[in-house]
Length: 75
Image 1 (tube, rainbow, N blue to C red):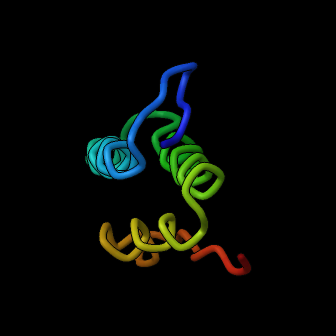
Image 2 (cartoon, helix red, strand yellow; image 1 turned 135 degrees about the horizontal axis):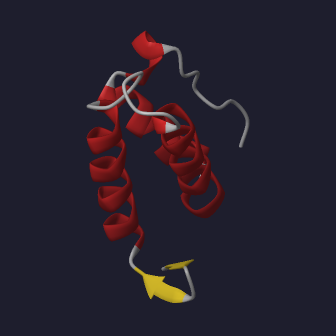
């Protein structure tokens, strides 16, 4: 369980919602202001709440390294 905005949420649900939000923002990358920052913030939230490994999985699944995002190293 992770806590997001004061609500308890299952870890897998949070990761799935993060995937969907990032995927949606990718459509607007470089077209709408702040889309890149929104993606980075969401990845940071996943890393903080679920671990770097989960954030790195999202980077792989969404092909974010090709767009300039780097995998998080460490624990």
